[in-house]
Length: 323
Ligand code: 3HC
Image (cartoon, rainbow, N blue to C red; front, side, top):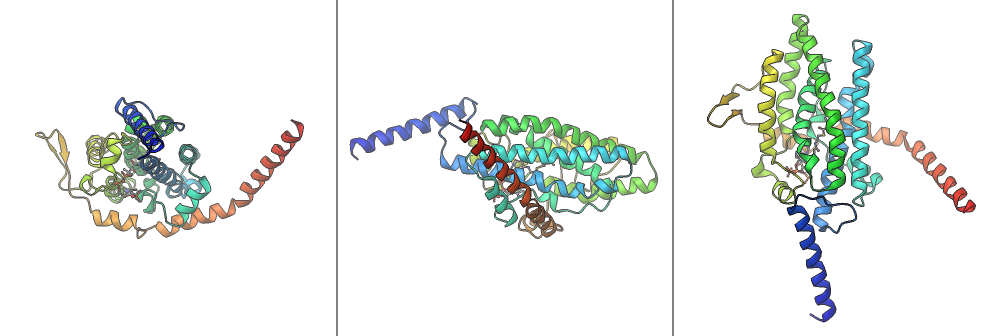
């Protein structure tokens, strides 16, 4: 190896050592810092799929905005769905700090080359679903996203802090909606229980496959992208939700669910991992519809992007001429 190679090698080793020291000290990796290519690609993968999930996640509840039972419920639901759009935009911006190209990320989503959360591929046939999504899906999101506020990549962690504040409103509005329904008629109580029965297991699947089958968890934990494993967060969600279900007066559809004093956690039944695999691979109840709506919205919005780009180019030319 000649002197130049040795210098280059020493430089690369020093950069890697610096990166690892930053991670070890629980400090943040920032956009201008050197980072291993694999760290960059893992962050783009996770952040992009998180952003896709937020945008696709607007559809299931958005379907109820025009059918909300009161102006108050409509206003709350509108605010929540708009929040999800904002979460998507923060996260696409965080992905762009890693050199990702937003139109390219959207193209990957629409063509199925990038994922979004399985949970958004289920239908919302009753208004109780709006409450159960807020309570269970946003509740699961909070369990998953609060630790991400301490993720090693700076822009992602900072986006999470703002997102988590809004998620807690999402979860509370859902739970309050369900409390109202549970104080209503027998038919309304049955509607809530039927919705809980449909959303409970898919909510547990949001945390990903079991640790033993997780492709990325070990490396993501080593790089402090993830601060807990999939199974740890799933368990935390179950433990948090059981007393909430009791206070609501609904039962969770798992005959194996019980407190295990020895473990200090709730035991729960086996998740149907084949269902998660099916839904992730595109064979969920609403996958085709969700992507078709996203594709159509992207195409319908092309004129807005073109107009904004033309306006920006014109202003840049004017500023260039004035300089
Ligand atoms: N749905 C779709 N894909 C999933 C999935 C799920 N529920 N769980 C895992 N996967 C995918 C992973 O993306 C990975 O595929 P890839 O290599 O093509 O990216 C594969 O299955 C293996 O899973 P791993 O556990 O190895 O992958 P991760 O380490 O990335 O863990 C994760 C998966 C826990 C979802 C992690 O990516 C994560 O924490 N992401 C950030 C949070 C997020 O994206 N949440 C999605 C919901 S957004 C939301 O809830 C919005 C709220 O407002 C409602």
